[in-house]
Length: 162
Image (cartoon, rainbow, N blue to C red; front, side, top):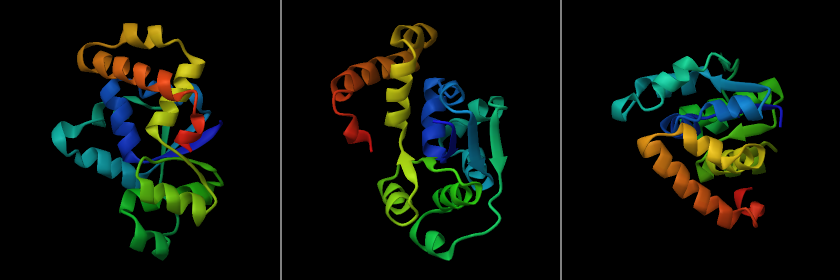
């Protein structure tokens, strides 16, 4: 895996876990459309993920040059921007958790959508879970412990993540 375009949901989830750096370790290039940056900045509940996003200087924020009317009609602004940017930059991998957006990415545009779960599975393969657990505190440690148990059971069936 070399380059990926990310939506806000997975970035916020990884930020909550304090593990946004996983993306840096797994990919040579991590791209985020400006619309996704705005979604994260607008915050919602306690600006989840914003501080982690700001610290991640290795994430490249790019504005797609064109808007696809079909995408804008089918998906929310951030998801549509992710697919537009991936197509413009000729990047096949998109990090999106929403089922509808993943289906559109795969079936209409021939992109390869993956979710936060797949990122964590790839991190499990590349890194030792013990290292991740030792660096986590409080809530993040509990979540990673749960994820470890869940993915230990599911890793025998990686097709579940496609």
